[in-house]
Length: 145
Image (cartoon, helix red, strand yellow):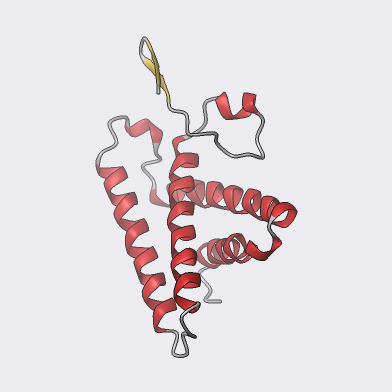
């Protein structure tokens, strides 16, 4: 974290590998970081499901349903806490539809970046970003997949 006068810059441990160092150093909307944390929640769900399925099939889909519910609750709790503790309200749109659209944009941006990376380096892990893209478009259109 770098603090200079009345400005702050928070840097992760390396950032998105598809972005140049200059791009990773430039300021970005807070929604990009929010999307990155939600992406981490998504990845933890997939990791838990894959680990559990090694022990046997989820024939009734109970595990998948429970993990999906956990993902929804975790994401909602994070977003609620984030909104409740915003010190600078200019960082997030007050209008719910605008905020949802902005977050969807950054979630999709992240998912497509992950899709490109996995396709190039780990094609066996394409399920994570593909599932994210499907979920984002399902949320946007309101249609069940």
